[in-house]
Length: 239
Image (cartoon, rainbow, N blue to C red; front, top):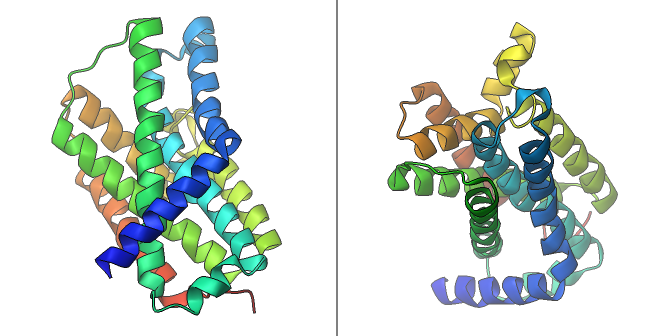
């Protein structure tokens, strides 16, 4: 199974490289937000305030939105049906897609942090261990949710839901809109969903700060539930 995961991961990365414009878009959205608010200081947002949320946004973009849409249309056009005829189990495909996306996220994070440091002279005192764990958990959570959506719905529905979730979590994720300005009921919802807790963990990791156990618990919960749902319900082709 490990050999199958490795081979499929390489295949996914090669396919991603062929869609270079898609990877470019994944980088450009958070990077554009960083540059715009970094230079304008609009709404009092500083680079220090933005970076944790933009890291969470990068993971959301790659692991949930992009992965869900790509996989959904692979199912629609029977690309995955051929894989289903091989001995490779669904879990191997899920691991491979999650692994390939995680590698892309490393590139996204490196570019974001590099621009923040070189253009805006931003610096951090990171907790490397917490940072890596946060990336791994966030990637697992978002990929699991994305693959669950893509593996159970038609491609058109996946496209609509993935984009809808992206916009919703962009607002509720403590990315641009500070979570404390939301109504109390929405704050509760935001804390249950994975992106705001992910942002909080990145903020703690970048500043050697304490974090709420509830934030870690929420991300762990989604990192378990998302892949589990994908593993249980993912099908190779649309019904």
